[in-house]
Image 1 (cartoon, rainbow, N blue to C red):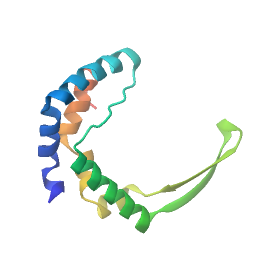
Image 2: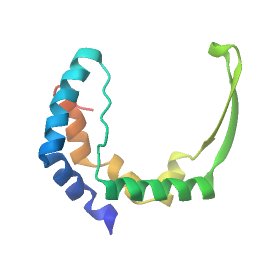
Image 3: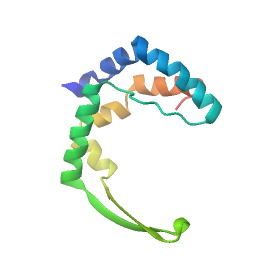
Image 4: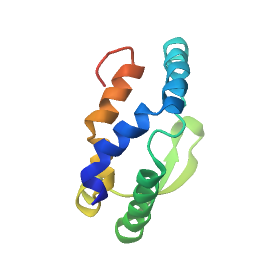
Length: 116
């Protein structure tokens, strides 16, 4: 099952030469600007599995929210949302990615060693 090998897949992806080259420029950009565009941060297989889980979660658990935002002149914002509990209970790969020590280690590295 993919959720059980997320850390292995991330580790292999992060170890690739192309990723390491991109990582160095992104670390420098984060240190300079305080933001970073990571680009692809996980293998296609993981991204596709997460996408399928998101689509399924939205179909089964979506809540429609229509909000007025005072900071933008009470403009209306419409969106669909799925709660944290539904994500944890209704998916496998998404929680595995978000709790991945390999991903947390990478983000800590980008953040100049400060734990994320």
